[in-house]
Image (cartoon, rainbow, N blue to C red; front, side):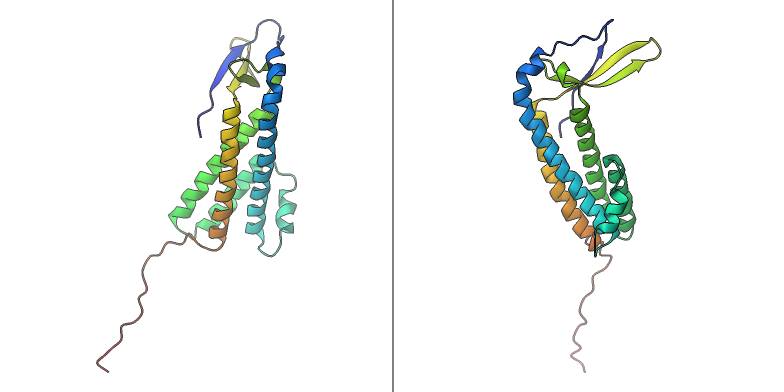
Length: 196
């Protein structure tokens, strides 16, 4: 996935925002943001299922009791811990796949937070939008972190979600079925003894 461009904007004495550009393009952004959030919801559901499957293969209720109040970050952390423990009995390949999935999930969650918590009235013509207020305590300066979010960037993240759901489901199935076991030796059928 392409690295997200960001920049810092310093606040002047007052924080007045000209939202005319944001209002002008909101109809173009809204479908992308909506689809992203819907796909992210599907990703979170898939994560819930992977965790519930790990906690009990006959039912999901135990897993959902544990998941009930967890944030998505906590779910990602739990997913990593549960499968890491399981993979300690399996090969290196599974652990590498787990690290890859966890990194992707963390990146997608970070992007989701940008989308959800952005101050969309600050969207400018270069497609930068404020995502966080930062205070420089050394000089008492108020700064705004701005992220470049284009329709193309949102679409890339939508595609990443779709691929990650498939990757997670395949990974979970293999891990729970011990499909990442490394074969340490080959077992050959005994040779026929023609001398007897």
